[in-house]
Each structure stands twice: as structure tokens, then as C-alpha cells.
View (tube, rainbow, N blue to C red):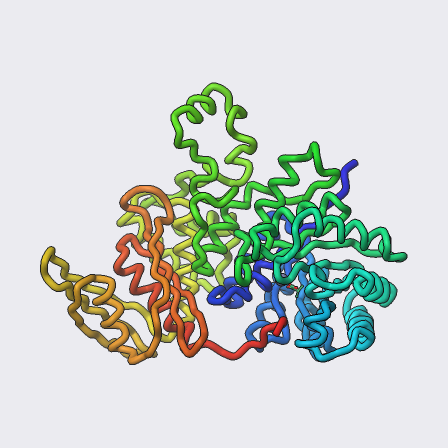
Length: 510
Ligand code: KIV
Ligand code: ZN
């Protein structure tokens, strides 16, 4: 019988550390529900001590999710561990993940601590975490650049103190696959009590090697992989969950382990994370990119039609493609709408928000005849966003004529009061954004603007993502509408609302 490979998803923690990818409590709960449905074993829901908002988000995920273990990150500090323990109180199954840096450069330049002090603090933290739960993970941060003898020493000590998972992070994405695999193998062989813990890989993608390094770790004895949906994460990101899971599943001839992941939810998880964070998935991205299963060249199409396996190593439907069947239409009632959303893992806190979402659904169904799951996801994202906003989009009128200036009249509801502004410039989007700027008098720099379609066809919802810079902070916003200028206005307003709501949060690794 093959071993179990534990999937530890850190989209909501390490993924969220990506500039501009911060998520609200409700967004985290929605993503966590999809991860639970996929049978993710461990969901790292956040860094509880970072801010009140982060604490509340970890707590909400812990109180909602029943089938996955919920984890909070904590530096090797008493106050962090206590905060993590507190946030996880309601979890069916809770894990505390504590870490401290072990490379010479981090110990000297960041921690200003001696190796002895680092071991002592790591041991103390693991013991403290064990007072809250029997499931404690320890990570020697920057293990990829740490001295192996020192790693053996700290790992042995933390296992003896009660750590049940030892996670080996290649924090800066420096390792090569053969080297990272060899490190895992050597640590398992050399640490005398290594049989009392699961060894885990946590790889960053700075050299584009995160998935390769994680797979090499698995081939050398790691039985947990830490990963994120779409490979979301700081800088070049983390190991992509979908790629590791499908590599192990597809190449069972090479791996003596497998995950419990229900892969048919992969695509919807990818789309949800992309729409919540505004991080678009590149078309040629493995497994979840729009072209991942598209056979353009005539010769390939011919081969696939004759015998699928000539050019396909996986079935598109196994990861959720072709699942966007028509689900609802203009005549669907409120109960059908509610039932479909429950199947998608969306529940409403109140009748009022259900009614609001249903009203938006009816408006959409008037404009667009076929409503797919992706449309419903986008609609729910927007309903949840709008509910919590101070500035609300009311209406937009755009006049555009070739060779003439374009004019945009935007009406916003700002804390209950409606205000309008008209501006004229050379483009409709520019005129819309400048009318909004004048209404709100806010200083922001637009760093990115992109439009994509939620489903196929010219009547599809357009999804706009914007990225703003405000006082050194990066903030993303998303908006959807069948009209892309209105979607642009909504995305811009979403980001500006986040600018207004921004609070200070601690970064775990600085
Ligand atoms: O990359 C890293 O080292 C981390 C640790 C906190 C595990 O994310
Ligand atoms: Zn990391």
C-alpha cells in the first residue's frame, strides 16, 4: 500500500503575504471551504498575531471548517504562540506552526542570536505550543541555506520537545532539486528521532524550481508538501498545489505515495483564488491555465481525436475542466439559486444578503442568457465586497465617439450620500477613474490594469483587476460586469475601499 502524502495548503498565509493579495475574513472562509471540499489535510489560515483582522480570520476559519486541520503560524515567541492557540480554540483539529531562522546569515543579521539561543528558543516554543495542541509543526527558516549539522541538532531537539512535523523551508528559493532531495534524505537518516515526526517541504519559486524541489523532497522521504493554489506567494510564489498533486497522481509509477485530494475541485479553487486576489492565471500555466488542455496545432488535434492519450497525459475533466455546464437561467427561482450556491460552498449570513445576491443574479440573467458556476462565483464575490464597502458604485454613463474626447459621469454613494462627477479625457476608462479620483480626492498610483473574461462569448462577464500603490502599500481590486467600463469602475472602487480600510499588520518573516 502506498503512503499518504499530506497536503498542507498555505494560500491563506504565505500566499496572502504576496503584496496586494491580502484577503478579508469572509474571503478566507470561502476559500477554506473549497479547500476542505478538495480534502486538503491542513489549511494554514494565517498568522494570528499579525493584526486583529488576521486573528479574527484564523478564528473564523477554525470555527467553520470541520474536516481539515486548521493551522496558524507563530514566530518562536510566547506571545505569538498564545495568540495562535487562542485563535484556534474552536477548531475540530488544530495545529500550531512555529518557526525560527537557522541560517548563519539570518541568525547573525536578522535575529542577532547565537545558535545556542536559537535552539533554546525553538525548544521552548514547541513546548509552549504543545500546551494548546498535540499537533505542532516546527520550521527552521531558511533551512535551504543552513548548515546541515546545525539543522540536525535543532530538529532533534524540537522533536524531543514535542514537534510532530518538521518542515524544511527553502525560504529564498535557492536550492536545486537534486540538492534539496539529498538534504531531506540526509536529515531523515541523520536525526536519531526522525521517525517520530513527518518531514515536510516548503519551497519558494525564485528560480522556478519550487514544484521540482518539492517533488524531489517527496522522492526522498518527505510526506508533507506545503503549497498554495496557483502557486500564489511572495516574490515568485510558493509550490503550486495543483502541479504537485497532479504530478504525484499522474506519475504513480515513480511515487510510492499519493494524496487524498479530490482533483475535480482544482479548477474552481484556482478561479476563486484568482478572483479574490486579482492575481490572474497565465494562459500557459500547467493544469489551470486556459491553454493547459487546448490543442491548437492541427496534428495534435487529429491525434487527440483518434486516441486521447497520444498527446494528453491527464484528463481535463479530472481537474474540473468542462465542468462549467449551464447551471441557471433567467427563469430559475430563488431556491434553485440558493441550492446551487450551497453546492459551490457559499452560504449567506442573512436573508438580506441572499436577497441581494438573488437580485444581482436576476439583473445578470437579463443581460446574459446562460449563467455558469464561474458567473455565480463572480457574482457572490461582488455581493460580499459591496456589502462591506463605504464607497459604493451607483451608476456610470459613458459617451464615446471616434475622434472625440470621451466623457464619463460617475455616481457614487459615499457613506450614504450620493455624489456625481463628470470628466472628459481621451479614453473611457481614464475618464471614469479620473471622475472617481475627483469625487474622493485620494492620491493613489495605478500600477496595473487588466481585463479578462469570466466565461466564453461576447456577453460574458468581464473581470477587471487593478493594482494601486498608496503610501508604499500595494492594494488590488476586482470588479465584474457585462460592461467592462463599469467593471473597471467597480474594481477601482474596490481597491480604494481597501486603501481606506488598510490597517497595519506584522509580517512574520521580517
Ligand atoms: O518560507 C518560509 O520560510 C516560511 C516559513 C514561515 C515556514 O514561510
Ligand atoms: Zn514561505
